[in-house]
Image: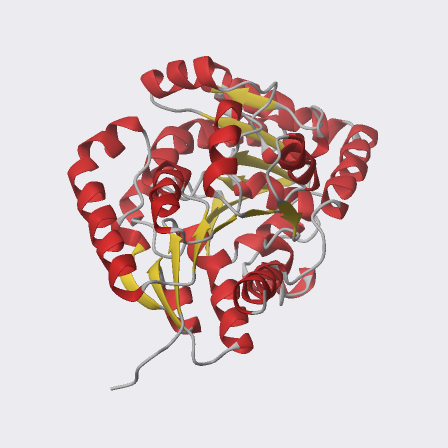
Length: 381
């Protein structure tokens, strides 16, 4: 049985964290193939060489109600991870996003004198700035993915390093426009509307109907020169997409989301990483988001931001329209998309500003920069 003298624990509790964490794991093992890396992750981190103690699919919960229901499980998971830490005495802990769990876990490491590094910052710039002083006590360094985050942490006495956004290296190997349109039986001469209802069940349930309704109004206004693509994850339950499949004028596209983002003329997207990906492609968009009324009410009390879409947050101004909660209606979606379609000058202005957003995302290699920085600090100080 192989034994290890160096141990690291990584906790990434969501699917996006698995994707971002895979580069960190790969980078660490490039530095030292003998490292024993274990923790919470997914298939990508496991393939990169990490031992999975828990899989992200079993620990990712969305919304206050879901988290409350799973509190006993989360406590057991935390206790098991603490037992692992006490058994293996890792030289460092790397936490990736997943702030509800990870910030509490970081606090537990203080008494064990284990350095904690954090990649993908909690959104303290939106809510919970009071947590910054507590984070200073338990986190050695933040690895941030937006330039403005570095200054925010430095201002509060927290070490921070801007490493670039992992999105930049995850977007690659896209087909040409001609190939994509031919493969999907799309008309290259038509204006193409891209719909991105989200990746989670709750998001799709709340967004798909109003998006389909918005497309119906847009098509009715000009049925001959417009087409619609709905981009979804490959493993999404077919039943959730019935509103799309019941219509004969919407193209359902699985596992080719980035190509849809790049080649559609205008997008309607659920607020989240998709809005930043669309900004990367300089694709004009309308951002929508609907949530549980209680969650929305609590969020209104906690969040201190004039907008919620990452494209607008990184630009630090209201570049693209946002339709939140009761404003996210089919009529308003259609009206805002129509403005793009009817006003090419407005569309080009938005594309230009989105290009500025893209330039702020840095260069490829974020995960490996995190790995190199951690390894040098932990093992070569």
